[in-house]
Length: 350
Ligand code: 6CS
Image 1 (cartoon, rainbow, N blue to C red):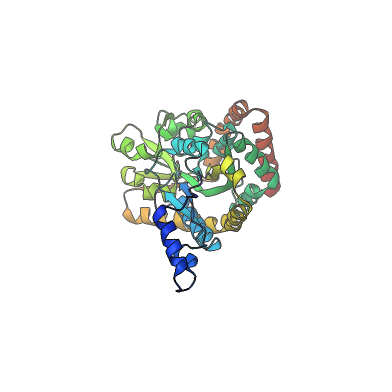
Image 2 (cartoon, rainbow, N blue to C red; image 1 turned 90 degrees about the vertical axis):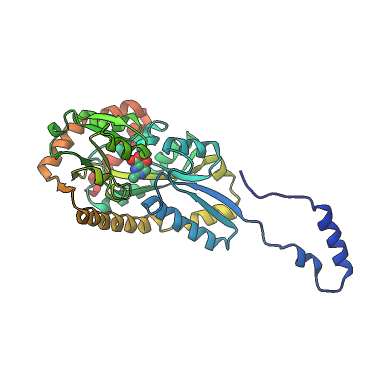
């Protein structure tokens, strides 16, 4: 995993060293070999394309770690599409072929049922600051870390990327409007169950297939944060963009657990140092991206933007509550504890 290699001197280099030792032109060893350690490469896989929120996180992390380590640690970023779909990226990280990456609960909940808690509508506080403090809660983070750890993943950060908006070929303001609408969902079954309970016909698909599925009319709608809708051009194929403020898209930054455990002290310290303040940094980025790209969608025209009012949101909230029981069934006792902690924190903050 660690690309650092220790080679014996090749014969030509050994001979050169000996000859150099006989000359009087300064220190031959330092002329020929550097004491600087060879760079270590950390591969970082994204579930989103260049220019996305995940890309901004990874680019900033790369900038920081390369500065802190004076170039000793280098980060190679693989944007979505270069090495696999979300479940495939998670597999590569579990195997240690990639050290770091993003894993969104909409896919990850197939592997870690507790991750499904991020898919439950109207659970986390509406207020952005309150939401950030729930995610920063140490007790909650500890419970999530253990769940990820059991699947060979080190949970490093939970990154909110903005509210998920729905796009469709019609207005969706009440659960009855979703009756029979073929909505693309992420691949974890709980995400499909959320749309199912609202009356839609869920169609789980990888992210990379959504555009063509819309184009070929295999689906009628989909849900994603606004920045993603714009950069993936979904709005160009949809007449309405609806903002229900039901689910925030939260992705997790994960590392291969064994690799993380095996990091030497310096590398671990640098990694932790590079992460400092990242939640605040990325929150500003996601706000800026989501706001500016909503404007781009508005300017493009052809997509009506609708915002659900409180009574409409209440109808969706009410209809979604049985999915919490379904999550409890899937995620068991430890999943219960996670949900209960979020409910306690959200009530305290809300
Ligand atoms: O909808 C999806 O599958 C993807 N959406 C975003 C915004 N990020 C990654 C995720 O896989």
